[in-house]
Image (tube, rainbow, N blue to C red):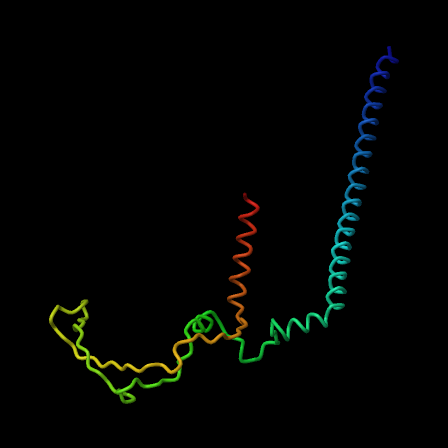
Length: 178
């Protein structure tokens, strides 16, 4: 009878040993998979670096062609200190063209003023109809017409860079949630 009791204890011990063995094997497999993932990641990074270096070598091999393109078409140059601006407000001011040289119209002297009557404005709102106000207006014709002058600008504002980074982060988050 004692043998029967020990037989069941033996079966429990054998099953526990088998379960422990299976658990140790799965842990070993998980460790190997993790190591394999690390190696694959390093291989991927190495391939990217090789591709980047290959592109750089090809680009440096064509420097003479790039210089020709720059002188003929692109006209690129390093930014000068006067081209950096301090923020969005200064950037927005570049939207307005520079004031052109003034050429007076025929028959009008420089600085001549003409009087124009407009309705007077009150602090409460627009003026009543028929209450004229005298205002001065100058009209001079610009010399050469109005043409926009292209200006090269580089931003030097951490606020603007922070805004761009926040926008990029929001876009990345939006893409992940789709």
